[in-house]
Length: 101
Image 1: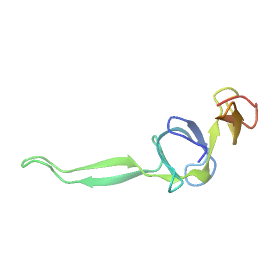
Image 2: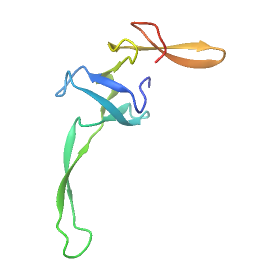
Image 3: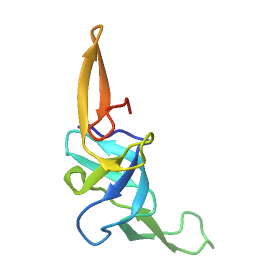
């Protein structure tokens, strides 16, 4: 998976198309990511102590990584990611400007 936690992304398909956000958590084995403020689902939470009220909280649900593009911090465009190996070290490269992400 070429996208990591902390990257800024643009959603290219689905209900939230055109929105930007920051990745909170990545699930590489499932090929899914959780984005801040996107794909919020309501969760009913039981009261933990006696006398306390239950509540409904909104948490972000994961979406598929194929529905997003990375926003390059250098050129600020939505782009694909390439890898370049320099001195036995792997670097992520922006396909549009050619600079390191």
